[in-house]
Amino acid sequence: QVQLQESGPGLVKPSQTLSLTCTVSGGSITTNNYYWIWIRQPPGKGLEWMGAIAYSGSTYYSPSLKSRTSISRDTSKNQFTLQLTSVTPEDTAVYYCATNLGYWGQGTQVTVSS
Image (tube, rainbow, N blue to C red):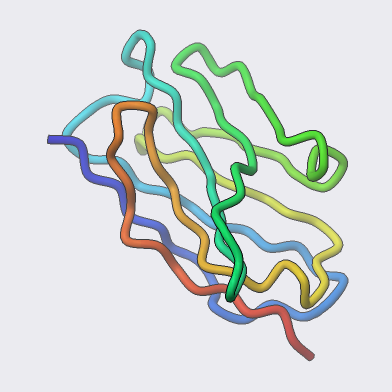
């Protein structure tokens, strides 16, 4: 069974870059047809798909976040990473990593505040 675990700072200052890592176990991030996804949920709002990286390394981004988002991977560590630049308090949310097979991490709270 695939397991995902998010890690990263819980507090980020406005204008800084938010960086989160998702560590995957029980499956390889290079396995054919696997897509590795970042999703967030701001307080009181619904889920927002942010972007994904495919087993091939191709990346896909939400149009609304594309200018600030970068997703990369480290195949040697079986991890993929989210970077979100120029954050504001509106980026405060629970951030999840997930896969297209339906597995999700437990989520990590990130607060943007000075």
